[in-house]
Image (cartoon, rainbow, N blue to C red):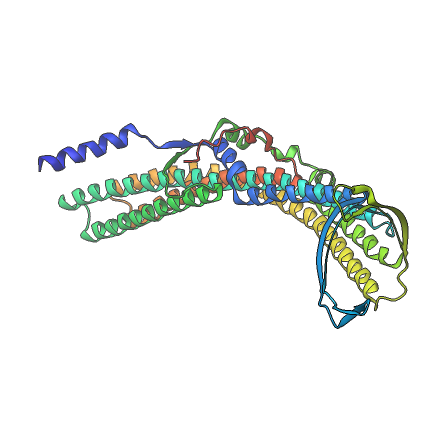
Length: 457
């Protein structure tokens, strides 16, 4: 028994000596910008596009190669018949011969003209690289916004948990009061049962909110790319920056939808990437059309040949040449490639136009939602005061015997709902303010990139 007690206290001391690491919003964003799977995938693709650009430049340069060879052969001829020399017959003897040869050459090919396909390929690869870089920048902004959303969900649920805890405490205290009143004959047994049900419902709400909080935490850790089994502590209150957002009329800074859309089209990395993808698809058409043009290739070689390594200069050959190839008929394969490239260019153009219209929709919708959230925030703040005062009145009426318990419970439920609505309005307003920046393409991420990803365990 003593051993179990000692072990129990050791566990407590160990837990106290290793407190949970606190994960702030800034730190969480810094971790996500280093470990999120979306970022890792996008950043790893950059090297491939850089390699494609290098290969495209290589199309303008001549190729160079070396060739070396060695041959050995042995020939044997058996003797047949006889020959007569001075009247004396002499049998023919077989012959054996061995030959060796050594050769080496340097050769080069240089494409002088390929229907301008090399220029189009270079332009396409550069567009693809720049598009991938813009995509990576947009991914970073997306990571910042998504991390904010996940983190605000945790802070919101933490505060909602406080509301549910206060509601449970109120119901527990009210149950004690009603039991005492029932003992004194001032309250019916039905009131006791009614309050017990209310207390049980408050407990269930608290359990649901606790589960919701744990789920929100694990969702954030998964998005960050770190172990969801690790335990962290999180902020349970708003920062000064977030308080400032709540006290600021953001709509004054965003009063012209047309200007906002123009700003987004000039700054959105994904829109710039889509524009480059369209240009790249047009390059693909040029590459396909080059198949209708002739190609001109220069070639050269320098060769050595000998049957004795001690005499490498036995045979030398230097040669140059030009090769002109004009395709007359290739079974409509070139026309097919051109048509497919033009289809892809049309698809890229449609995607670009769709994205532009979607940006208009995103900004308009977010702006309207932000307006509604701002109004809802003011209404929720006023509702809190009214619900609080109404609860006090109903509690006093019930205490004096002129009110019903049911009315008290209804008013208390409305007060809890008002508190919840205020939290929804506050965090909705904060998230929408960040979402509008995200849709405008101005959500900053560079400051967070410097955050040390110490959350990696």
